[in-house]
Length: 446
Image: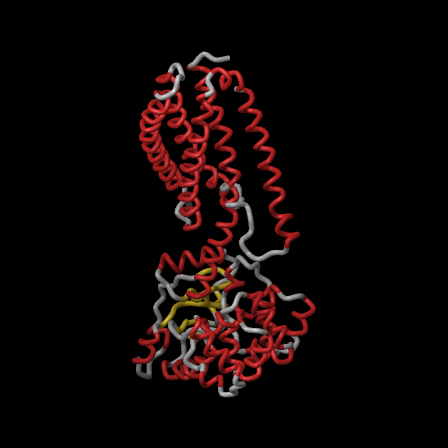
């Protein structure tokens, strides 16, 4: 990174107008990593001395927000040739985040065909396949001779996102595909239909983008065709799928903590977190109230407080583990039938019971050893209370963490919202009731 930065900065400092040729061996991704570290004057030198196609490649590797900032530096007039060299899905990402007035100004500079294409892509929600697909693909009609199909391939290959496979259509409807190598070795006269492989895996344009990415992973595809009423309208490439997966994981991670990971304003960030914090504060007051209701038991046996934190930590840990497993299965679509769901929950129950039993034995031994060096009475009983509380709380926490995201998913609520601070606080409530309830019952405290 430092070597690349030094090279680019030295060429800029010397005002070397041959910078395009001298950095031609740099991958656009490496070039893009240097861009944010440059001063505006240095970037402007690059805008003036790098060809539009090179700038398009570099900007496509930047975050959308940074790409928009660079385009604003360049200006609308000079941005159009750069945007025209970008893939349609990249342009859509940019236009979806730019102000409407700027959008109209930019869109008006494209050809009518491009305007219609971009307007079509822009109508889909950002989590739908239509918003992440590209329309730069190669398709040939099934009744063409392979010689004519090869001419189309050569003519359109420069503008296509990928040339392998070549899709086969019949009046625009997707009916199969041909591997590039099969098309190359085929000799005329032979119709495309005779070479087409009809084993098609595709996605609908309104499907969830995450589902399309999962389908590509399941079938081992680097390109996934997208159809609308059977008609081929685009493709999702592997880099698009990786972007979707990364975005999904980032959003899920943020929801685990009830925050947004992406950059946001101070006001928006505060507004997003306050409702969660307020809800958790209310639950915290409820937890404090529950603990105070067992004040009599705590006053008589103060050693109970010593083990409370350990129990709450343990139930939070096991609940988070089972929660993560359930969310992972939900994201991958592994729990799409009642039988699979029941099998998963039964497995999590067995895991929770085994873990709880092991931890309960260890908790009894450790708590009894700790109490042995104190003047506390009923050491064995208190150790048993701690052990049984660990056992019951871990089984409950494990099943709670596994089941709640599944319930949320069935209710069409993002399962990640069932996690993080919310589920931990709820576990604390139940674990507290179990612990002090057992203590009151077994020690006959009032």
